[in-house]
Length: 389
Ligand SMILES: Cc1ncc(COP(=O)(O)O)c(C=O)c1O
Image 1 (cartoon, rainbow, N blue to C red):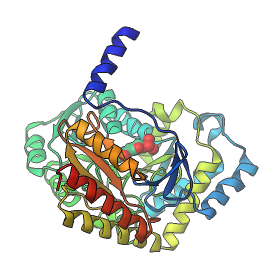
Image 2 (cartoon, helix red, strand yellow; image 1 turned 90 degrees about the horizontal axis):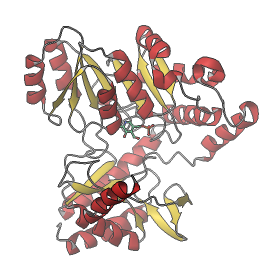
Image 3 (cartoon, rainbow, N blue to C red; image 1 turned 45 degrees about the vertical axis):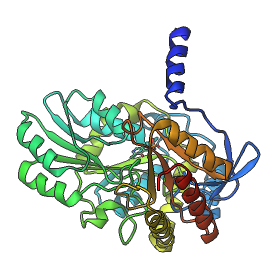
Image 4 (cartoon, protein in one colour; image 1 turned 45 degrees about the horizontal axis):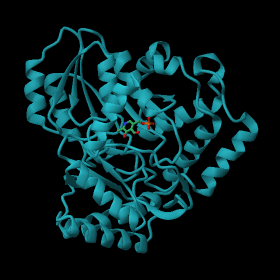
């Protein structure tokens, strides 16, 4: 086996697609230490820079004293500590849904929703750029899979018209696409829902805390808060903690509690993760300036990079893809930025389609004007050398 795997790894290396882990240590909300050198972190999903906020850290520390370091049990056995109940109510109210259920992470929540709620005579219509957790969930489902072109409503409509089903039909999409930073056309999808009838599953992992006047997510932006059949999002990005949740009505949530294997057969989250998520939620509900400050940074960085002439695709929020194209060239650009103290990742296949390798830059609230100007000028300099602009 080793010989075969080594050959495959060599092939991956030759394509410039080899991945290595980098062990880092956070210094501030935006700075990290890597190999003893300080870097500006340009690839964090902690959009509101809350993962090191002192109030959130205090909330986590306080419950550790009361509840211990771990739950050491699944939720169905004895891990469902009371903080779960409080946070599930809070998140359901915040997003406008009847009931919530917390999962250990978003990957497991997506697996649960799609593999548990669909049957063999159902059809799942899935955007071609959906996150790997949604793809894997669809693979685990026995339903028929139909992939529609990215955000292409004509293609979705054509396929909805063609793929009739004796069972249920589901449309599954991310709200903010994690590698492209563009958003799903929810109003158009809802128009199709009225005409064709299907259940809507939305993954708002990157929209929560960021989009909408109140920051509740992309549904709010479209005036569709609380309207999905099943809504999923995570605590591990803008909310600065860890874990995920599914929102829906009583019946769906009770069904997941009874049948979702990634809910039933895993150890429940520790109190510290739940308490920090709860504190973050409380803070962003009371004070929208966290989000407003983030948007100032997003608008500034996107404007400067756009003006410089980079291909940023149709991104609109904190995720800014800088498309390079070839894997090896993407890696070279990443390495040159690393040498200048910028920590960011080259994203290559299979995470993104062949020929669209890119640097995935994320904007966070904690960036100072100086941070942003330094990052932008360094990226522009490298982009010119690589003949991207
Ligand atoms: C769109 C999307 N959905 C789901 C997940 C999985 O969430 P988690 O990291 O909590 O497993 C991620 C990223 O991690 C994501 O980007």
